[in-house]
Image (cartoon, rainbow, N blue to C red; front, side):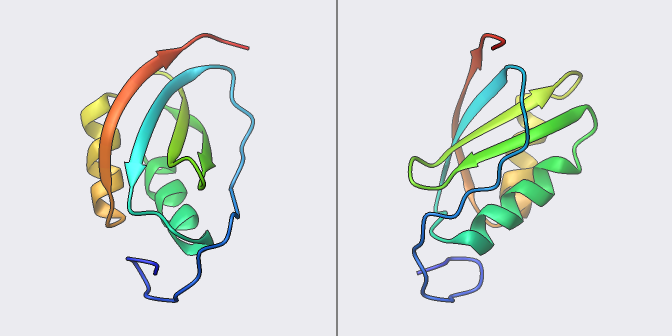
Amino acid sequence: MCTACACGTADSISAQVETNGGSVYTVSGMTCGHCVSSVSAEIGKVGGVTGVQVDLAGGAVTVSGAGFSDEEIRAAVEQAGYALAEASPVSAS
């Protein structure tokens, strides 16, 4: 069940914005399209973020851009109502 809106859905909707490398974060608690939308919107508000790609099934969120910190991303994820597990850099594609 969706922890943000209790809609009860558990589909595999994902929001995708083109990214050219960045950091990959694991977010726990996402279960539906509303979760994806909430997390994407909050992370998108962080200064320096130019792209957000969410893999709902895997719980992975790839954030591209420059000038943002892991703590800013963590705060955005928590603002959306979820928990950030980890971050790791990825190379540009």
